[in-house]
Image (cartoon, rainbow, N blue to C red; front, top):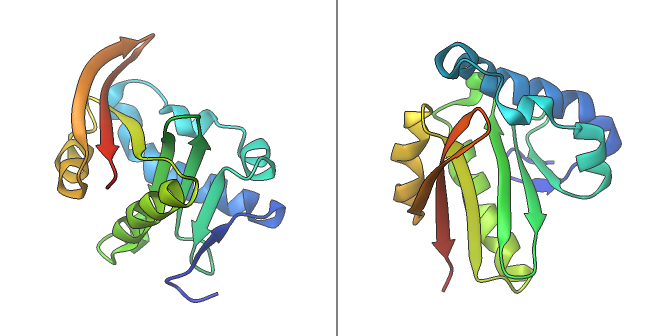
Length: 149
């Protein structure tokens, strides 16, 4: 696999999926005062369900996607901190658009914690618009939508 390729995760990738997810989200624990939801995910179940796509060998980035009738939900995106600044996140976000189109879906939705302000600077650069801010349990979330052409 080339460093550019994004492929469906396999069962053997589960430990790497957990490692990259934890590495990407751990820095936010203290700031938000909670463990981010992706760190609680059942990675094995998500991989088995075909929701996880990875890049790198070893894995340095991933997305978790859920197809719905009218949109693709970007449940999680994670890039290992050692790979920051290498365009991995950009490639993954482009892949999300390609995947949505391949599934015949014209919209991608996601949310991020309001205290993850870095994300709030990134998503608009890739065509995502804020649609609402809502508190879900202990999480204050900013919801985004991207309409695809």
